[in-house]
Length: 246
Image 1 (tube, rainbow, N blue to C red):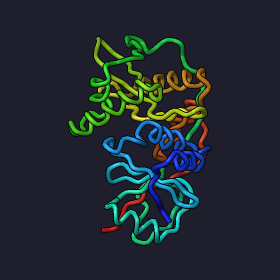
Image 2 (image 1 turned 135 degrees about the vertical axis):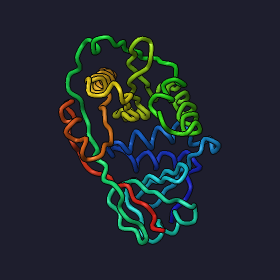
Image 3 (image 1 turned 90 degrees about the vertical axis):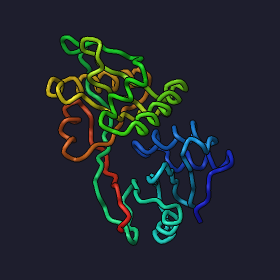
């Protein structure tokens, strides 16, 4: 039976269920630590006998094992249309994308690319507008609000490169545990791509995380695996994004 996480004992079991699961552990545990007792933040957390489930908006993220029919019925009751996790066979759902989990990082270059400057504490509003360029103002504001909480609680980082005082490239750590640092929201403005800015910044932030005793990890689409391998990351496993059939 799937039940909501409401007690300290359930929270600890949730952490146990996601432990050592690359990307899922820092993603789900950080959200639980920051938002588990703040329903207004938009997160919900649940447990089955052998699995942990996190819900944000229309997306559910699953770690571990679930009874397929029970999970399908539960997600339908909550109106969830997207599901990310390990390989699942749910009735009425279809695989949309494969997500590759990578870990580690090669050495970083000491100096940022010519003409750019590294900013380790950018304006989080400007950073949100950069990495979510083209997205709605609501999405940018939600990301900004969550980034403020993550950074202020030392469970997140936002780094950027500037060119002529303009943010042109950014990457963030949106989840941190004792073991992991989950990298996400890497973005370079289109007119500045192809100059190695993103690769330099990802490697720089990843190396900083390793200096703090954490293993960098991230999720990418399969065509990006070669890029992250060039940065010294290794491919660990695959997760899947599922959509509910109409």
